[in-house]
Image (cartoon, rainbow, N blue to C red; front, side):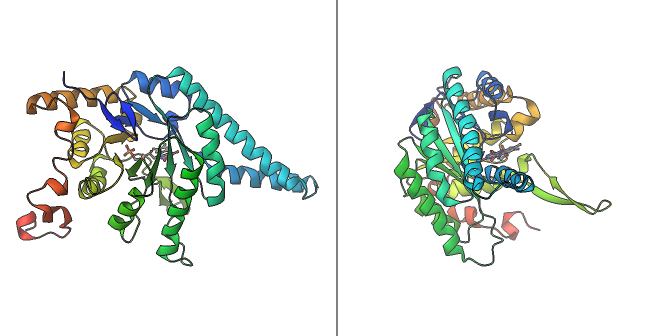
Length: 327
Ligand SMILES: Cc1cc2nc3c(=O)[nH]c(=O)nc-3n(C[C@H](O)[C@H](O)[C@H](O)COP(=O)(O)O)c2cc1C
């Protein structure tokens, strides 16, 4: 059996497959199942600052209805935040006790000033690493892309000052100069970049004239976007790269390792096929390595990155030309 072990964010992993942040990683029972299913690490469900703010808004509205004075405002803010952070910190502590694989906590924040204190609490709870789940929909017409981008750097700087555990940043592909942003972010001191987050989409119910959620889970076809970007950026960045989105089977896992990913995160396939899917994907990886004579992951990681390619132009070709499969 080939050696599947690797390192990611400075953490030693028994294999490169991580259960990504989602509902399955939001409970202790789910986390235990994922470990038993073969995942080498887990990224906990994010703690969402947005949700805390919404809960706070509800409490505030309720308090106002009851005629409470606005002096309670700060108290409720503090209380809601405290409760949410406390239960998240408790989950981190329980996961650390119950699992023998690394536990990476995850924060999603919308207001930059709040991140740092969450991060500190999570580190104290014993998390092995921290993933920052950052995304601002580029629908804001008031701020330039430079101003938006700047927020990423400010937040990273603030968090890195607060914690000593390794920090990963999970980003979206929605940047106007993606390669440059990835490169610059990789030099901030973060341990890894996760390419890419995937977002819930909307759909319209044309009978009820209502907006609904759609495409909660990814399809294997969605692998192609992160695959291109991992392949383009591998060996050109100063931190590890993890791939996320569209990895549903052993082949997807192998492709992302060939592109240059240090670790690969999976979510939708675990929902569709259960936590045990990880073991099947890893068996496929081991068999493939045997067939190709690879003894360790390092023997082939990044072998198909753009940097290693004999035809680097193909990685940047985005239009159909005759010799590229177009008719
Ligand atoms: C039900 C569900 C909940 C999710 N919750 C989070 C979350 O809390 N934080 C986060 O960073 N990503 C979250 N994600 C996104 C996943 O971590 C992942 O990036 C995305 O599903 C793409 O990977 P996949 O193609 O393997 O599903 C969630 C995804 C799903 C399906």
